[in-house]
Image 1 (cartoon, helix red, strand yellow):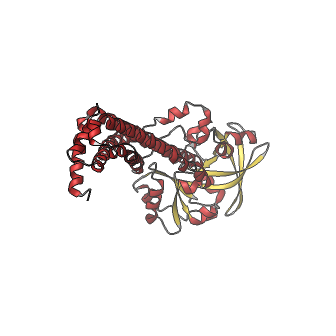
Image 2 (cartoon, rainbow, N blue to C red):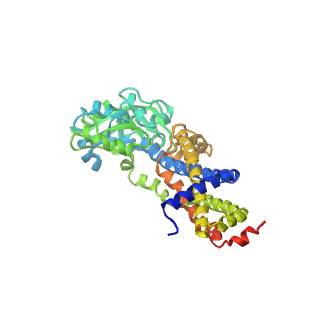
Image 3 (cartoon, helix red, strand yellow):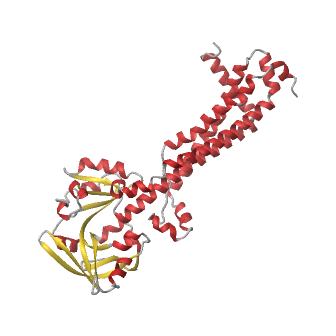
Length: 411
């Protein structure tokens, strides 16, 4: 047998000593692989984080990071299918990962001004809680958030279609449990988010007014703010504390097709991520090849004293694997540390915002964070695999063809 456990152990020890005999060359290999590892981790962290930030941003404008409602209402959003009670609210708020909970009552309405009318979907909210689960209150460009019953906040484009201004009144007509209802409200704020569905369709009313209009004394759902990136896990963890037929839905289910559209390009970027590893592996291979050329005489001497070409080739491959493994380990520490910092600090938001108003339509609210995943370490490990493969194909094959007598005459 060319190799057994003892010979592999001996070769590994020899390869380990060799990489530290040439410290400058080893340091270069380590730096190349560490750089590729950091770049790979940050690439995927930014890629996944950007996708998550866009999804979360849109969820906070269009719905919520997570929403508790009945299965019937989720399938058929009619106030009659709303929550039978809110007795579970205190228990939900005490669950790990739940930062805030805000009852909502959504209903279809016809909104009338003195000049025209338009169909819309109104959202009854608790003004004290809504800003914690939604980004709409932070995008009121004119006026203020509603504070008490009798007030309404409209999307700016909707207000323009109705031809109403701050201080003027609109009437909301709806079909309630007790029959048709109407209520006059004063416009106190106009929303300008840059997101067309929000600016065209926002109608925020006080939760008490929504209950008067619909006849429903509870809510159609409870909007939740949960730990970023953990929406699906927390929604699933909440299920045991919820009554039967009531479920917690995460943002991917709430956004539906929009969530799928946001994430469609994620798989196609895997090829780009592989390029980092490919170029790093080629850089490692070229460095190893130069090392073999410089050590031709040394390798020839080792062959002359009894180390056959296959063992020499295996030693060169082991040197490559050991050096790239060190670089991979260093890169993991630096990459995950930097990625963690960027996942807690809004470093990328101002960078993307500097490109202009075009970024507003993405709905991130100016906040973009990186994501964290142990899979990034596996993606970065591809550099080691490719480097070992190329080392077998190029430098190791050259060692296999080495003739000790000729090698020892090499200057």
